[in-house]
Amino acid sequence: MKKNLFIILVGMLLLSSCSFKSEMASLKSLRKVTDGVFYIEYSGNYMLDEYIADGGGKTNDEMSDFIEKCLKRGKWSGLGADKDISVKITSPDFGCSSIAAENVDGGQIYGRNYDWNDCSIIIIHTKPDDGYESISTSCLEFLGLKRDWQPAYKFPNDMIALASIYVPLDGINEKGLYIADLMAGDDEKTAQDTSKPDVTTTVAIRLILDKAASVDEAISLLEENDMYSVIDSAHHFAIADSSGKSVVVEYVNNQMYVTECPVLTNHYTADSPKKDNGSDPHRENSRERFAKLLAAGEKCGWKMGTADIAKTLESVSANNYAADKLNNTITAWSIVFEPEKRKVSYYFRGDYTKPYVIEF
Image (cartoon, rainbow, N blue to C red):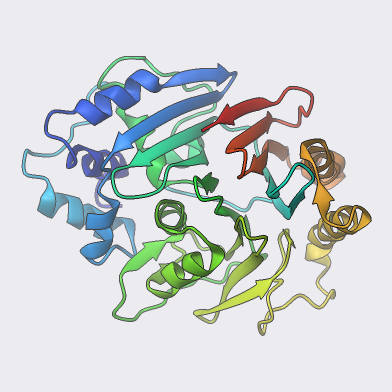
């Protein structure tokens, strides 16, 4: 990268307020939840609309150009951050599982496992000026922060944490729209090169959380932008809404495919040329988890409660697979989303006995 992405992302936030009022208020909200887990809130304008209106970016360098053009008070120096920290958005292969069902208490309910290594986690509560309130999750290692990172609890040292706004891996908004990013199973890159604005995977998630109230609106947003997977891995999205609609969105040969399905793991599921036919031995683990999720939903007629979703997520967590243990893969976090209650229950590092609950 030609520039430190920390400067890029934080600079984007600084554009919203010369007084730093929103940034300072956000950093005051930064707190430790438990070992290696943090929470932060941001209310205000973090320049997503301006970024998309200016054409977005298909690479991190293009995002840098946008900031360089718009930032009038000089570059953010990263004062207070370790000089070796470089916020380079990376995302190596990870597992993950997702399920959507009807909530026995009314409305819908969604569950998600994020299977990777033991990383620092940040929960992001955003209230954009022109968008929907949402709760999302990110892995701080993707921002260049190590597992033992600790905030300084003062401005501007912790500004790096604000970059997580642009790197959500899953989330739910106030309208009950849920989205999660999962690996699709190979290294196909998506690069839809048309005249539309350009977005990368995590920017697309942020855009959908901020702007979509339904699955159909989320799909429309994806259709209105060119997708770029800049990390050399194929991704797919699980998206669901408060109406009960749940879909899988995948990209094959730069074409988007959408299929209704209540569960998702790590093989191609949509009706595309790459739809899994059961012959690839490398996808056996994914197919097993997929089958378990389907069986759990079918067993109860797709009507589940918080405990049911948590139990189902535990049954497909990385802790249950020998290969994952050998690779030091864990379920870094599991989440149960209840949109009608505006309630999110987190379970960290495979411990399903102590949920951390957020109501927003």
